[in-house]
Amino acid sequence: MKFFASLILATLLFIACEPERIPYEPVTKFDPQRNADVDIKNAIAEAKYSNKRIILDVGGEWCVWCHRIDEFMETNETLKETLDEYFIVVKINYSKENKNEEVLSRYPEIQGYPHFFVLDKSGELLRSQNTGELENEKSYDLDKFMLFLQTWAPKT
Image (cartoon, rainbow, N blue to C red; front, side, top):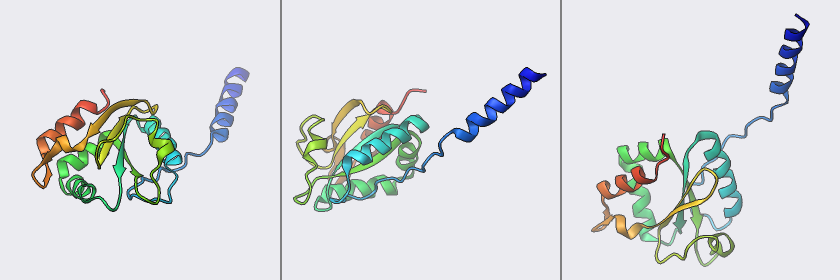
């Protein structure tokens, strides 16, 4: 009986000492004032907790195609559901004001914007994706985009 009481007390102490999880706040805008390194570290912590992968969406407010891809991802329900279920999307600013050179130097060279880097939940690079390959005329191709997401979604 004494053993079980000690076990229960130890369990309650462990639960009480566990640090409170800070809610993740998504990075949804290209902001030259943000600290991209901190944003990526926060996304990794959330990805580990939620077992998701990370898409670093590199671009800027100056980028027409960045706005087009945002609209495409937001207005297509199937695409949005897939993104929400399997990925954490983090916007990384690239602009005259802040090129985020130190952070972006960790990844392959970018040929155009927007550009995606897919990371696993530990932050390891899995894919460097030229989003031009997902385009269709002045927008994006849903089938190509869904295939990209399905290919890089975490395996269950």
